[in-house]
Image 1 (cartoon, one colour):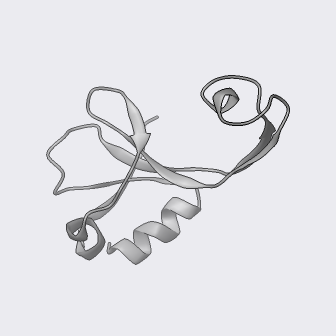
Image 2 (cartoon, one colour):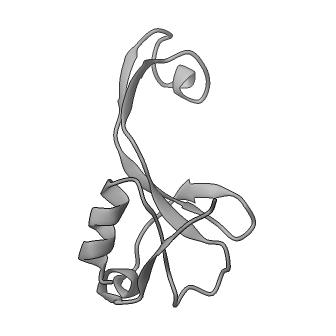
Image 3 (cartoon, one colour):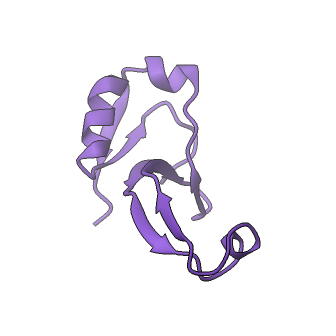
Length: 89
């Protein structure tokens, strides 16, 4: 599928990968937005404790080594037609 189709699936909570990615077991997923009160670092160093924060939705990636981080797409990712749904169950 193309990236537009993949993005629709990500927004529905699905896990997706590209067959063109080198790392096995890598995939992207939606982190839903939320609201919370600041109660620990690193935000405590920026805002006063108890400050209401709006945490915006974004896409994270589960990397090959098991770590997770914010995903930034490349032009190749945006133009690719090799997006696939995955099931980690």
